[in-house]
Amino acid sequence: MFLEIENVSKRIGEDDVLSEIHLSMKKNRIYGLQGKNGCGKSMLMRVISGLVLPTSGRVIIDGKILGQDISFPESMGVFIEKPGFLDAYSGFQNLKMLASIKNEISGNEIKDTLQKVGLEEVMHKKYRKYSLGMKQKLGIAAAIMEKPDIIILDEPANALDEKSEKKLWEIVAEERERGALIIIACHDATVLENVADEIFRMDRGMITEHIVL
Image (cartoon, rainbow, N blue to C red; front, side, top):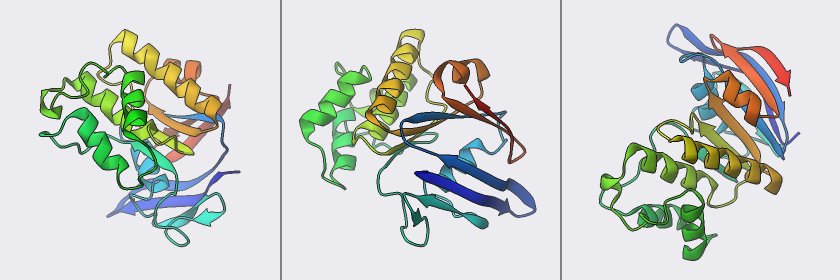
């Protein structure tokens, strides 16, 4: 398995946000996390991405223990809640600045990604002038532009119109075919059943059901 979550728990104050989560995931698959708000989906994604350390248990990515062998996953694209883009920069400038950290992709590759998500006509517009849907698309573009091994998307269809949502799921399918391991959190079970290969249902910080589609 490429990603293993071994008995991960997260406690904040008196609350058990995650309780003994044990999952195994591999590349070239789409995994759905489904459950009501507050069930632990976003926290689990933060733990997998290295943004939050678990109280107990461990996350192993490609044989390396997160927080011990590596501080953050070596090849991961993340879209969790509102991305921290700069208002005064254009969509293209924001992505170029992010891409400069690893310096693995060209400006043309960034433009190709912006076109893929439907932002080709507004890529040079200031981020502060973007609609909610445009901001959502830019966050998705940031997550996929470097073709990472793992892609994490938290409610990626929020604020998207029907046409844009259809395009989103086409992109997700393309990324899976490329070989990525994709984790999607969504409260809508019907959507996940149409998109995911496997679904983990969550409630009160626990995995309550595992469905292979």
